[in-house]
Amino acid sequence: MYVDGEGERAIREKLGTAGAEGIHFLDNGNYHYVTRFFLERVVSPFSLLVFDNHTDDQEPAFEGVRSCGSWIRDAKEEMGDRLKNVLLVRGTDRISGELSEDIPVYISIDLDVLSEEELKVNWDQGSMHLEELEGLLKQLTRGKKILGIDICGGCLPEETKYLEDNTRVFQSLYEFIEDELCGEV
Image 1 (cartoon, rainbow, N blue to C red):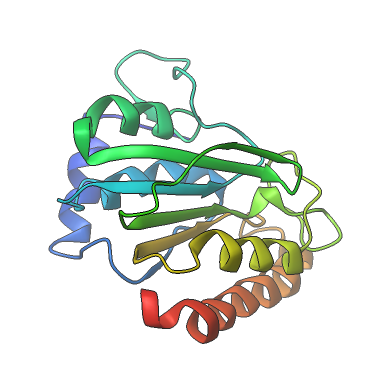
Image 2 (cartoon, rainbow, N blue to C red):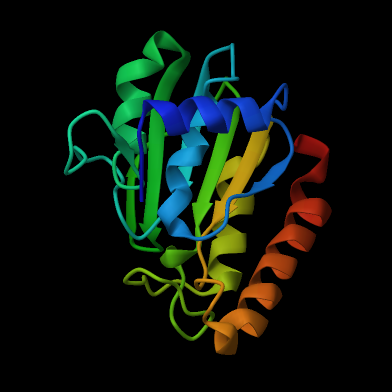
């Protein structure tokens, strides 16, 4: 849930020269702050499209660390003029912000936006269905250049009774992105 300066250096080292492009699977929602490390690699102006049941725009509980709940706030502060705007989708009826029409978009998806009917995650969950998420992804990115996508969420590894649902949702999203958005990623 938290990473300090030493942890950030280790993550950057592990990422090596990997860019923001492509599809990145980040593990469960405790690690959503890893999105920030991919955003650092975007050098041109961009918009950020986030699907998440939480705003992730708050101060961390401890000074000097980044958290899974602060990474959007951190990105807004640290990206400067490169991050033009953020569109946060917390449900089909809970959308705030905007995307610029003429600049590329980076997409970050926290699966806690989905209902428990779809899969069980380690945070409180939204009410969206996978089909709705995929529909909104297609609608909101139509005609846009997609810089990269990351996906986090799902159950903790020791919660083996939920792994089948996790696998189904991750596979479905991967196939949807490949089929519907691949030309853009």
